[in-house]
Length: 96
Image (cartoon, rainbow, N blue to C red; front, side, top):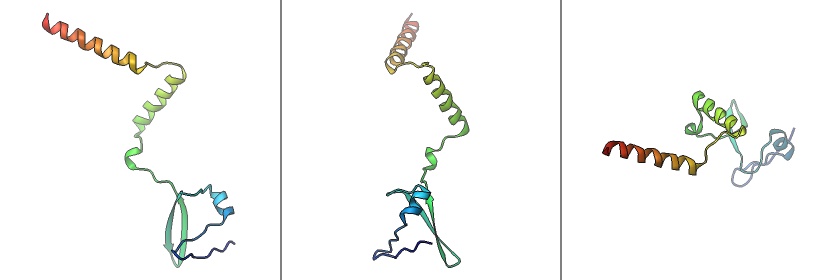
């Protein structure tokens, strides 16, 4: 059992061995909860709900990663060039 002292600004030092076991590092977030007279400190990863992919988006990302590994990609320069070409062709059709 490890014992820590409550500091001047209510700070608690978590012993190194416990931090190492939990993979905690300086700057990590923890959840602090009171339950039946006990204080529980749990490691937490903060994730913005807007940053979570839907299952369909996850599939698209994985498919794109596979394509990149196989070398199947288009450079931004090529993509922009093709878009300009399509736009140019559409303008010619309208005026003809």
